[in-house]
Length: 114
Image (cartoon, rainbow, N blue to C red; front, side, top):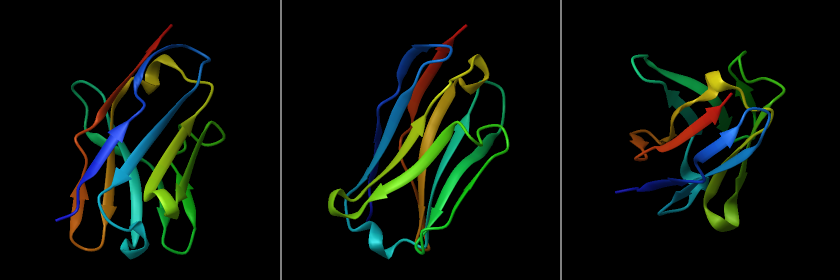
């Protein structure tokens, strides 16, 4: 059973930066793709960024140019660097990993004050 633990969320002013981490209990080499999702209150959970086993990345249009997904195999960790944060980025951010099957973390709250 794989466990994913997110960290790095918090309260930040608009224009600021945060780096989220997703630490896996096992090697991330085995995952086909790892994703970051987010869910704002009253809204659906949306894909923010992904990174494939081959290193390809993709981003939601709303975060392109501001967010960067990366990984560190030695630490079994995937990161989401978030710059130029906006109030609309406020959400719970979830890490997701697909072998298959699919695993989810517990989420970390990001709040951006305007």
